[in-house]
Length: 337
Image (cartoon, rainbow, N blue to C red):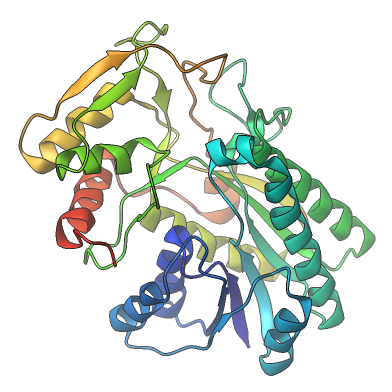
């Protein structure tokens, strides 16, 4: 029996594949490579010394995905596949809704057809929108403020309703915060296309000389240094969290949501200082205006009590290790994978 990993060549997916293989699982990977490269899977094989089947299939291709299920004995699914750029989702929302939601519906339909009862879903802390207080707890109201986050909310509802209709199904909704870092080997890491939407890959491009400077969007927030605070979590911790969720699926039915983060927030300037420590030099930055509208809450970090108590998940890496491993990947792979 094998674990089907959709989007397994992507940033979090590829690191999770390494963790799964190292812990003795067999895997099958599906990816359309719209946000990833086949070379990432070759590096997964190099890191683990193990081979596995990989299919170039889009989840919207029902016939292609059906062949994957027909040719492999699938025991559970970890579902990463989906479009994921917040800014882009505002520009082309219909594509995001169609791709992310319809692809999940096709996947669930085939899971029904082939009798697969367990799924860990790659959700996001964006489902909470702009919470009124922190830390954020799983029972907070879901109020996403962009189409990307809304697709996660809708898919969570779909999976919950699906499970209610079939009580022997088990679903773990993994709401993680801001993933950063890379594999300690520097063979895998975050490789965004175009201008990065997230802080650490942007700082990494400043450090590598590809960008002139970092623009900090506002320093007048009600936080200790005036910049926004976020919960960052190392991608290797997230990979371990997905394996923990698989073990939870083996002994539970129902649908449960879990926050995966460190439970601690770091400000933009704190992250910048940690990155400067990793590269051993100061990095240029300027203070700019806040982003348009009410796009950023001053402070966001997750309560991870539930994940600790039910999954045994406790983040092992701090911000220094996150920045160190982010920089190591960029330094060792100046032209990408």
